[in-house]
Length: 91
Image: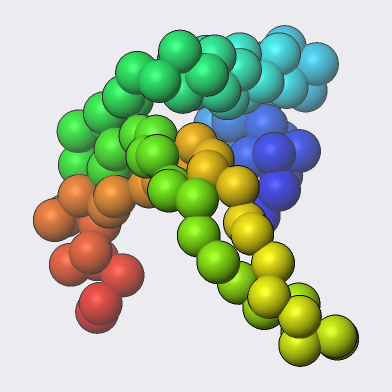
């Protein structure tokens, strides 16, 4: 499912225009992204948590040359599913 598909379903479910639905869906994702950019957590009950994590600098191997390389430290986005979501998906 894409963001556009989600907006279309939203439009049908709530009897709104596709343009308005796309704005609303876009707003939700924009808020999640801006919250993560501030390194804050987004928690959605029954769905899960979006959070950031610091990944330390590490050594890796370039697969084409087999040469050792340094992989820099980075902040990454993570998702931790809620117990309810895990149970639904596992069925």
